Image 1: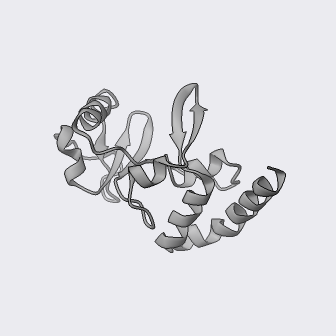
Image 2 (image 1 turned 30 degrees about the vertical axis):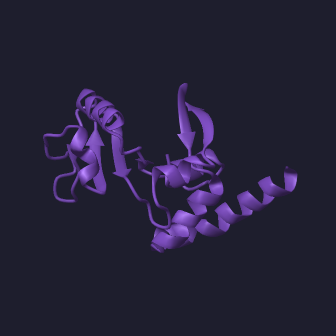
Amino acid sequence: MIGGFAALLYGSPYITSDIDIVPERGKVNLDSLSDALRKLNARVWTSTEPKGVAFDHDGRLGEVDIWSLVTDAGRLDITFSPSGTTGFEDLSRDAEPMAVLDVPSHVASLADVIRSKEAAGRDKDRLVLPVLRQILEETTRSD
């Protein structure tokens, strides 16, 4: 997990409307992800089709770098190489294990969330960066 929801887990006060994940590109993992997306009734999200457009998918999900989806559980963005990173292997090195709604998860480190938001350079990312840097500094000081 990376992005705004990951930042929220570290204490960011900024609310996000989606969850961003960075899957490992192996066939077994992508087949499992595709199965989970089917169970969640995942559809491609667009600004003109906020309820989503049905799409056929399988373990070849990794052939597209970014998926913006809407599911029965909410918005889900899948990105294989978030800005400023080289993807799963890069982010998994420092990822923090966390339980999210009692589901064991791996969350990109706060430093990696910051790195990605800096590289993305979007207005919404620049807005939250000072707070994230402060949280990181306070966390580092208390260690």
